[in-house]
Structure formats: structure tokens, C-alpha cells
Length: 134
Image (cartoon, rainbow, N blue to C red):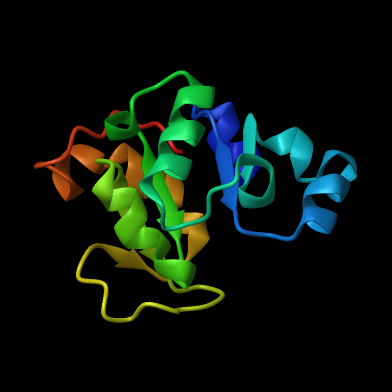
């Protein structure tokens, strides 16, 4: 899915509260080459849902937070943190659903994400979504 999104022109970022061991191993991960930016809480001294960590990811992508779509399952209050900086938020329930009370858009299959982004003018008419995934 990451390759499909990148091939579609979507810059991609990871925001993670993972351990320092994970951050150290990241460059050797097969996922690292599929993402443009990785922001680890242990490296920046901030953790989700602190709005500043989302701003860092957007800045590293070279876009405003309002130009980003944040996709997450809701762990660590991440959905509210992303929304607080103006990102469009999509809750995925495919692998885990840790915030079922989230009132925003939710989807069950990550394979649907490219279609959701293409149809963004219908789904998020009140948003400033321009097809970027952050």
C-alpha cells in the first residue's frame, strides 16, 4: 500500500512512539525506504498526542499540517493530536481499533485508502485535503 501511495504522488511520513531500539533499527527496515520521513518520539523528545510532533512531521515533508491526512488506529490519543494541528484524520480499524469513540471518518481496509484520497472532495468537503498523506 505504501508503494501505491508513493507512486500516486503522496509523500509519506511515520510518526511513532516506538522505543529507541526501534528507531535505531529503522534505517535497516524494509519499510524505511517506503517512507519519506520518520519521526520517532524518542529522537525528538515529544510523543503522540503532543501537537508538536505532528507539526515536525509536516515540516519535514515540506507541507502545512492542513495539507496532511493522518491515518491511525487511535492508540495514544493520536487522532485528537493530529486533528489539533489541522490534519484530516482517518481512523483505520483493519488491524486494531483503539479509539472506537472517535467520531470522524473510519475505514476497515487499508486497501481503500487510495480511493478515499481520490474521493477526498466528496468525503472531506469541509477539509483542506489536497491528497497528501502525512
